[in-house]
Amino acid sequence: MKVLCLHGKGTSGAIFRSQTASFRARLSDKNIEFDFLDGPFKSDPAAGVDLFYEPPYYAWWDSGDVESVRAACLWLNEYIAMNGPYDAALMFSQGCVLGSSALLLHQEETPHLPPPFKTAIFVCGGVSMNMLQELGFHVSAEAHERDSASRTALEKQAGVSAVLTQGVNRWTGITGGLSEDELRNEIQSPYCVDIPTVHIYGSKDPRYAAGVHLSSVCNPDKRRTYNHGGGHEIPRTTEVSSSIAQLTEWALASIDV
Image (cartoon, rainbow, N blue to C red; front, side):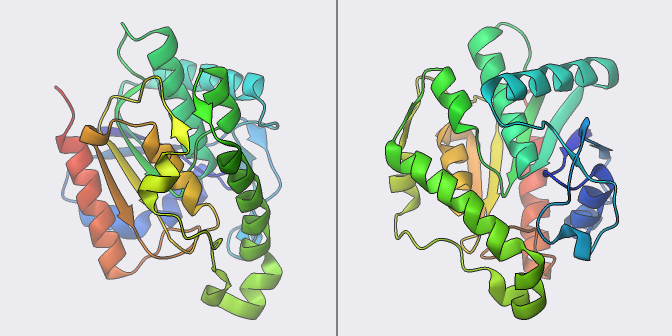
């Protein structure tokens, strides 16, 4: 099995390798090759990342508009054509936006061709609201407002000052009180990503709603979700690592051969 690994903005393939080491160690007896690549754009470090990891840092685009995301998807598809095929994609944060956009564009434009990967594992991710609207999805005003507010809150809660003064207690999320089903109903989908998907998010992550929104555009009969209970991170506790490893195994076992 070959897994493409897409890091978050302001990190790198090497950093993502480190962030996923705990749960990947539980898969060491499986025949899985993880391919960690770097985004094509140099970037400032993500909030708080430079406290723990040295540069360089990368991003998948330098602007989040639709054309930039489309260009990144084209870049990704070219990389896959040269280095794939890939059975799965493992993604974090901005990497999830890239991977979900590539899958949605495939569904819209080339559904007769194989998807860029056969299963997807999204961690603390979201979907491009602008891309959804470009593709004919209905996104509520509340979802747009929540998405914007969550990005501001993430910068604050993940930042150096919060890390140094509050530690793990910095993660407070955004109080909203909506259920996962209510959040999913904020996006109306004309079609959905139709491969097996895993959606991992934390209820204390300011981007929690974004992770739930992403799950809403994926086939509910082929998706699994897991709330790790933390912030915008991949907790390395035994319980969380074991759960993510099990979900990864499920995703790979669900591939249509």
